Image (cartoon, rainbow, N blue to C red; front, side, top):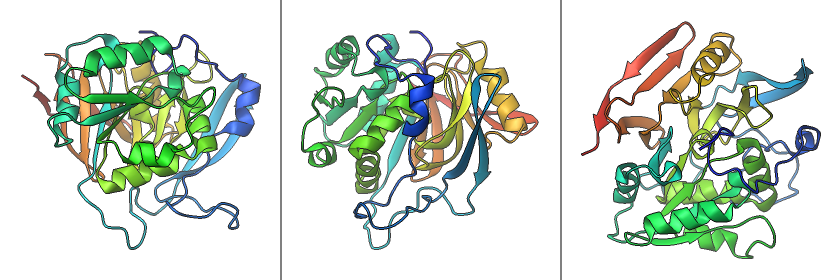
Length: 304
């Protein structure tokens, strides 16, 4: 698997750097909030953005909002919420099935309904085929395509699933496309209803306030994301040479908030907005909490 926040990048329909600027992912709206009801306000835990070009690369200046991430809208009944952020592995890398089995086990049904969102790869057909090959014997798989002519019932379709699994690829493009189709709002509602959210690489970064991405070229850069979970995220911490030093530098400089890094083969399991545990399908894979000037290993449970 190549870079690009991993995933299959063939046929990714990547936006040019110039075209990407007006399509930056907007701040998430609360579910049910009507369109054109005045100016939007930042979602809880989101980061405010000001962008400037420096040395040909895009930079973000991030200031934390004082409110907590992941606070449900008033009056909503909240069930147990799960997010599994994979640093790498699972079916995307043709790895063993243990990480994916862990995700399925959180859903409840013996054959859960699992929907794959391959948006970050430009709805790569090869990636979709590999998803069905990996899940058809142990789940009821489906997928959502947003390139071409999307289905009209996106909200009802996603809310009917037990697991929503987001693939890797170009994180910035994915968030922009989700914003156009209102997917980000549906994902929050699904999460609050108890649908398990999971994903690898771009599908890991997206749930956090911010992450480190190569969506804009070879140089890694910070990116504001959905903000369901507080802090920042970095996948592929061991398998891509620049991920670790760049993530630490950005956190040290305050360009990214402190956060969690995961090596390939590791899943970060959140219950609600709190990290419950880190699990691993590979014997030496690790996870780390990264703060300015410090990197601390997190205990990892090895999956049998």
